[in-house]
Length: 432
Image (cartoon, rainbow, N blue to C red):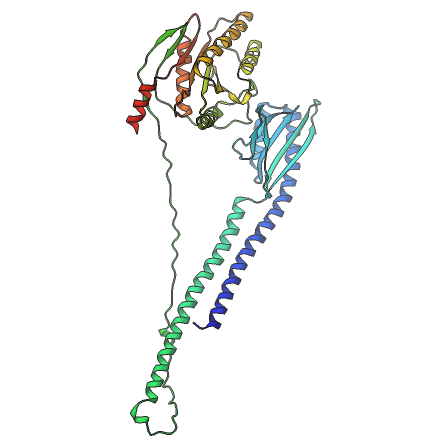
């Protein structure tokens, strides 16, 4: 290949690559501009609709939540939205959004530094005189738009690559045929029959270039899709039970078989009745706390407080919620559990401290029961990480079994799990 042809081919390839890059960049910019306009219009619409829902049905009512969810599901550019009253966020959607964060008090807020995300905020006044702050984050470029623009750019690059391969093959084959023809002419001139000829005339049709001899290269590109099947691994451990009594507080070991259930995420971060986290957020939060505790070599205590037959909307229940909140301090570390229980997480607390804390918690709860004439039982189950590498599901099962057993105790209904480290090490060794 001579330098002129190589230069032309190189310039053509660079131009094709530049076109694909410009097409992708311009496409993203135009989509972002269009998305910004639609986002602004969408936020104005949904803020007005949500205000009307609040006026008609009141905040946190079932009708308000259902209509708000149906409205927001239709907004394709919406990434996250929060609604707050008196500096407390009572509504966040969708809870799976990566832009939603929680502060130290458990209040949700939207955080983003992406240039392709726009955040809008509006203060509205509803008919009952309350002031609501609506904050929404919008994606100005949809993933499908990025995929479509990238696909076109990739096709341009692919076609340029195929044309380049064909051109290189064609040029090499053509040069080879020309070199063969030159050799034939040179041999013909040097043949003996032409030694005495003063002038040599080139006969017609002596040189014949057969275009069909030029090889054509075809590149077949096979696009395959690999399906990856997610496998659910179920951890099953069988550890012998051992019971021992100490200071009216029973310490047991268990046979553990975790069961995982799937639940739809509710609206918002916290329950409108108790003010605590929803049960569906319980295990993921516990898993994250276990990871942090393992990296910093801290302990984690898990409490499950079972209050059967408690009316969750009664005056006594309101006082109980406040006692539990004071005990765990952070609202995002307390969760509703099953129909009659609550779960709380304490970080950097060992089993002995947890038992002492649980005694005081029981005394406070029992005093509320006495004041309101309640006779139903109270059960508190405790377990700790105890320097183990365990999933949240295991601790939940341990604390749940302890809480159920605590309901059978009369004097001090508190049951805690004490880990047998020798047996646990033997189990881990066998499993590995």
